[in-house]
Length: 116
Length: 120
View 1 (cartoon, chains in turn yellow, blue):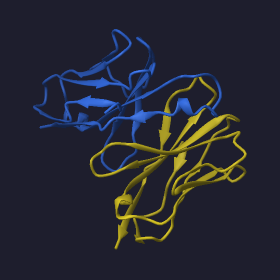
View 2: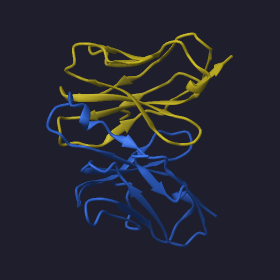
View 3: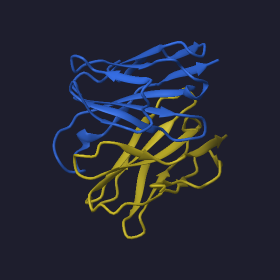
View 4: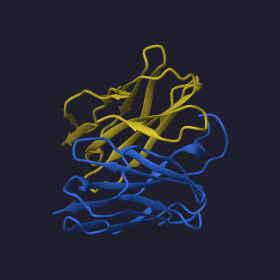
């Protein structure tokens, strides 16, 4: 069963505009972590932001914020003030359990192209 | 640069040959992971080490694949008798296991730039 679902088609966003990338997840665990990674064409997976299942506040890191809705099992990434360098694939990932299960389950990614 | 480094970045090999990839994790990280990513997909977990011990292997890791981390520092991933279906990017990642709970930022997993494999 798919644990992470990212279904948006490729997105074009105007420079300086905000963009929201959808991610829904499936787990029966109470403790889990949610991650967003950026993958530019060079291939490197760049860590952007993390949200723990027990965190009461939505995570923020600079221009990145995570809209965490636990009851709906969604963890959408918001990129504010888009820049040309934000053009990349964006992956949502989940790690289940406390410290035992160390594997990340990834979605299929969202393609973002920022246009000037 | 103190991030995760991988070598080689690109490898083209003939079917049936053996290939080996090397990963150097972030120096203080005790956990090291290997993932595989094919075109249009997210990375898929292959295996992970805590220090020198290989603690988990995915069913994706066939008998032709072997990973080692002999001194708990760098790791190698070897693929024997390569097949065209092995063509993918092999990503290494590392993390520092600081303790239980998902609220520990130190458990964040950092990836390298990947090693692209093309089997012809």
